[in-house]
Image (cartoon, rainbow, N blue to C red; front, top):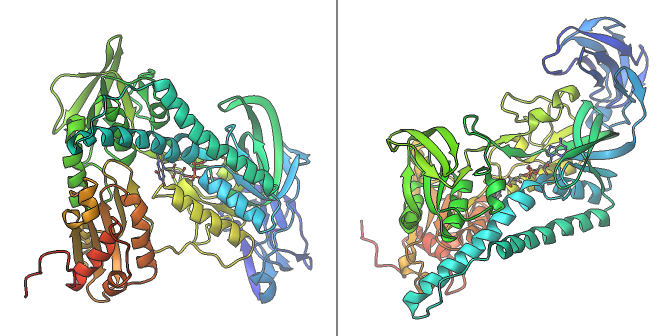
Length: 579
Ligand SMILES: Cc1cc2nc3c(=O)[nH]c(=O)nc-3n(C[C@H](O)[C@H](O)[C@H](O)COP(=O)(O)OP(=O)(O)OC[C@H]3O[C@@H](n4cnc5c(N)ncnc54)[C@H](O)[C@@H]3O)c2cc1C
C-alpha cells in the first residue's frame, strides 16, 4: 500500500527549510525512523516515519521549504508492519546547530511526577520499559500528594474531629473548647505528606525507575533537556542534561491561576499558600466558590476564621445537582459572613492593617472590605505551554491543554499526555487511569480510556459526591429519567450519626432502566460513590442494586434503599401513593 508521508503539525512554523534528508528511494525504514530534519529559527525537528515500509518516491530535497501538510515522500507500507510500529532510537539531537550525545537514554521518559506521572512511570516499568521520571521538585507526588488532595484532607480530618467534638455536647458529652497548636498541626500535615512521598521514592527504586531532578522541556520529538534544580523549590543550578527517549508521557499537570490585579503580598495566597497555614486569620476572603475554595474555607473557619466567599457565577460548587448543594449551604451557613454570588473582585490594596478589597456585582458591599488573609481559588491552568511541546510537534491549545486520543496519544504518536494537562476534570483519579492507559498503549497493549463516568467529590462537611448524569443535567438535556431519592432521615445509621439531613439519589434512564447517575450528600459520601460508579459501568438497573444486600446499619445501605425507591419496593419509607 502506498502512503503519502506529510509534514505533521509543527506548531506555528511555516516554510521551514529541510536541512537533512535521511533516506533515499529504495531504503527500508522502520516506524519512528527519522525521514527528514527541519530547522526553523527556533528549533530543529525530525519528521519520523509513522510506520515501517520502503521509500518509493522522494518529494523533497535539501533546502526545500515545507509547512504542515507538505508531502515528504511516498512510502510503500506492508499492512502487517504498519499494524505493529516499533519505535526506533532517535537520532542525535541538534542543539544550537551542533550534534550532541544524550546524557541519558531510555525507552520511556515521563515528564512530571504527580499522580499521573508516577503511575505512568511505574506501569511502564512494570511492563518492561526502561523508564526515566523527571520532576522539578524534590519530592514525587505532584500537586496531589504535596500541595493538593492529601494535605487538604489531613487538615479537613482535623476540622471534622473539632466539629464532631463540638456537636458531642448535644449528645451529652462535653469537651473543653479546642486549643489549636498550629505548629503541631502543620507537622501532622507534613508527616502525612512525607510518609506518602517517601513511599513513592521507595517504589520507584524497587521498579528501577530512574528519577531525574530538574525542569524539563522538549528540544525535538525525541529529546528533552533538563535544567537541573536543587533545594526545596525549583532553583536552577545551571547544569543541563539531555535525555533521549523512544517514547514519552507528558504529565506536567497544572498550576493555580493568579488574578492579575491582586498585589504581591504574603497575605494573598493560592491553595498551596493556604495549605501552609501561615496563621489563623480573623477575617478571610475566599475568591472562587469551587471545591478547593470551599474545602479551605471549611478548614480555616473551623480553626476560628470568619469567611467571606466571592463567586462570579450564580451558584457555589459547579458540578453536583443544586439540591445537594442546598443541603451543604444549610449545614455551613454558620461559617460565612457573606456569600457574594454574581459578584467580582475588582481590586485590592495591601495596607498595614490588612488587604482592602473592592467588589462589583449583585452582592458587592458598597465599601472596600478589610481581610487578614485572601485565598485565590479561581481555577487552575494547565502547564502545556511551559514545556516546549511545540518543538516536539505536540499540539497545545491556547489555554495550555494538550489534545489526545483515547489512547492518550498526542498529535505525535510516540508522545502521550495525561492528567490535568489534557483537560477537565482535573482530578487525581482521572490522571491515574489515563496514566495506565498511556503506559499500556506505549507497550503496544490495546488500552483505551473508555471510562463511562468519573466521580467528583467535595470533601467539605458534609461531603458531596456525584457521578454520571445528574437530575439537573438530565433536565437541561431534555433526557427522560427516573429519579429516586432516599432521605437519610429514614436511615438508622444516619440518625445515630447526627447526619439525618443527608440523602442519596439515583438517576435511571427511563427507557433502558439502567442507572446513569447518582449523588450523595452527607458524611462519607466520597467513600460511597464508587459503588454507584461501578453500577453505571456495569449497566445495572434498580433491581440489580436494590437486590444486592448492603450491610445494615450503614450509610452505604442508602444506595440500595434508593434503588428500592426506584422500584417502588422500599419498606423503610411510608408507602408510595398508588397512581
Ligand atoms: C488544594 C487542592 C486539593 C485537591 N484535592 C483533590 C482531591 O481531593 N481529589 C482529586 O482527585 N483531586 C484533587 N486535586 C486535584 C489534583 O491534585 C490534580 O488533579 C492532580 O494532582 C493532577 O495530577 P497530574 O499528575 O496531572 O499533575 P500534577 O499533580 O500537577 O503533577 C505535575 C507534576 O509535574 C511537574 N512538572 C511540571 N512541569 C514540569 C517540567 N517542565 N519539568 C519537570 N517537572 C515538571 C510538577 O512539578 C508536578 O510535580 C486537588 C488540587 C488542589 C490544588
